[in-house]
Structures are given as structure tokens and as C-alpha cells.
Image (cartoon, rainbow, N blue to C red):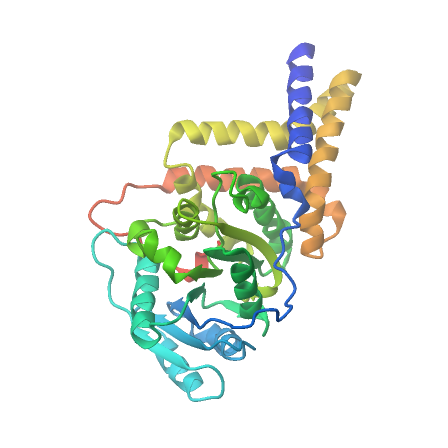
Length: 388
């Protein structure tokens, strides 16, 4: 590699990190948070929580109880859609329904019709049941069966929606982050997602950027109906972002981070890898050109600063070395707030280039495994549903 080429690459990487730090909505600050509960509403509207569940018997004891214990004064009904589980999910739900708390209605899910993705179809069946048992409910709260919520979460979601007249309020819940691989990979997943969909842009009516986090989504039923309902996104695999895009075309949406809702599902390297390979190439619209662009961008942002620092030092190129160092410092600074969110040491930010390589390999593996779906709808598996 020539001296000029090395300098141009390292300078480009440093310039891109400067842009990411100063522009793109300041996504890296991780400061889009749900407002503190103030109990300022005079009338709290009724809500139906829709919980699609498939083989979740092991977790429902914690997660479903957290829904039943919501301190919400507007009326809450829980509709759990059992999506053809082959474990003890139905019996666990029935047992929990006999205890104290908000009422639970169990729906036995049916196989999806042509053109519907499995999870979206389960959600749609929950919406249909909500219309029957609570026709006056103003909001639908879509939440995954592996998510545990603090008792004030629903009230805070409704407060945000009512105060700012928002059709979709969603929060990216705290993902399980305990073992070595989760500590290494989980904060980076959240960081990359914020970079791809800057939350301040998502929350601004002035931009077209739209996204959502499927683990917890409060949706104004009138807004959903006006946008065509879940049928408008029936065939999508990445249902949360599709729902965010749909509703932002018709109203306002909001996406933020929270520590008050937590995923109880452990992943490890295998779980993370399965999740990313399931959705990464879909995020790129199954486009080889976009895949090549993503590989080039990841390499420039995360690999060039490391390689440039080593090569610049070895070949006594101070300008390239300085630019590479600035790039590496830039990425470490940007990663800091997300590491703090997950209570991880800031020095872990120095390993972000290594983590980026792993995610790059997962993305390539996603493209390798992709096959066109002909005549069959995509299924869903909550064990690899990470948009939480």
C-alpha cells in the first residue's frame, strides 16, 4: 500500500467518525429515554397488551406476572396468543390467569395464511381478539413473551403517547448481557442499531427515518387502523421496523432506550449469530450491491483505523498514524455511552474493531444462507427475535 493511499484511507475513516460524532443526530449519546412518570393525565385510556408467544413456558412465569402487576389506572387487558406451541405454554398461561392482577385472555393461534409472516399473524390474531373483548381500548401494547417490565412501564408509555400525540412509542429493552460473548456483542448490537436508525431522526417529524423495537411497542389503535392495520406489513420478517415506517407515514412515532424493561433470554455467541444471520441480509433488501457497500463501510470505519495505526507506525508515516489514531479514538468515544448503559468498562470500546469483524462475518453468513421464499411465509422464533 502506498503512502498516499494509506493516508487517504485513514483520513477518510477519521473524517467519517468526526461526522458521526458531530452529525447524524448525535445517535451515539444514547439519550433518547422514556420520560419519568408524572401522573399528569386526568383520564388514563384503556389498553390491551398483545403478547405473541411460541414455546415460552420457561419464561412466562416472570414476564406475564410483570404485565399483570402493572400499576396502570386506565384498565389493562392482556391477550396472549399461543402460536402453536409444543411445550407447556397454554397450561402455564391458564395457571397464571387464575392469580391476582390484570385479566389474561388466551388465544389459540392458527397457522398463518399465504402472504403472512408467522409473528405478524400472531400479533394480528391478538388485535382481532382485542377488538372483541375491549372495543373501546385506545392503545395496543405489543410486547414479547420474554420481556419483563417494571410496574410503571405501561403508564410511562401511555404518558409519552398522550402528551405528544404519538401513534407509536417503542423502547429497546435491556438485552441479556452477562456472559463473555454477550458482554462483547450485545452493547455493540445496540450501538450499531442506533447508528443505522438514529433515534433522534426516528423521533423527528422532519425526517423520513423510521424504526421501532419489537420487544415493547405501544400503538394507538386509531393510527394503526388509518395506516391499514397489520395487514399492510403482513409479509415482513422485520416487523417492528416495518411497523415504524408504516405509522410514521401517517403520524408521529418515538423510539428510545430503557432500563425498565429487560429481556430474560440468554443468547451467547450462537444465539447472537443466529439472530443476525436471520435478519441482516433482509435489512439490505437481499441486494448484493448493498452487501458490498456495507462491507466496505464497516471495513473503512472499524478496520482501517487499526490497520492504519499499525502500518503507519511501522512505516514511519506520522500523518497516517495520527489520522488512524483519531479514528480509533472517535469510535471509542462514540461507543462509550452505550457501554455505560450496559454497565460495561469503557476500555471494552477498544475492542470494537474486533466486534465489528464478527458482525461483518455474521452479515456475510446471512447472505450465504439466504434462499428466496417461494410459496411459504416466513416463520418467527422468539428465541432469535432480537429487535427487543
